[in-house]
Image (tube, rainbow, N blue to C red; front, side, top):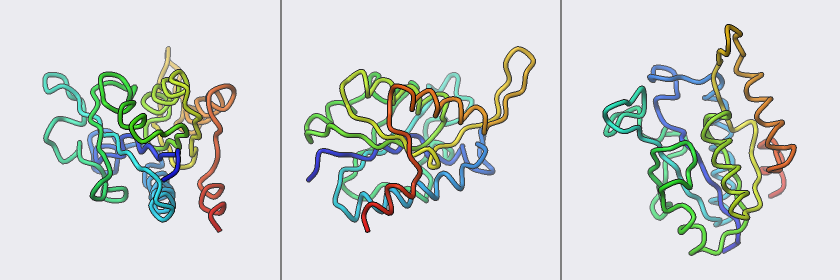
Length: 184
């Protein structure tokens, strides 16, 4: 076992076409996530799945017990892979994620999933604050168009801005091919 783990954040059905909160480019991002997941499994490295549920009174999506809150079939956990349930953007907040990682003596995290500007950003920054060495697989992360103060911000610009900010000081930000090809 190595000191490295893959963290897959919120690749859940509501983010996919037909879901309650579809993201731009989610199918491509999840496809890349599946490649990274296969790589980690082939190398017998740790994998942790993160699944978000909103509290039942105010669930705009990821409602408890719903199909939309389930992990998408492209990256389903296999037996022995922990699934951490969270209720906040930061996957470490009020969860057992840090305990799971510490018990396995994990020091390096590879993170992918959704959304660039919320849960990926929050989880990466928290991981670095806890002292983990973090890599983000940028083409295995998706987001959506945003609006601020009357300005529409396309998803690709939201994503690029957040990946640039994380790369500036928090994480190594790389494409899927850099992980998949390093194994060959």
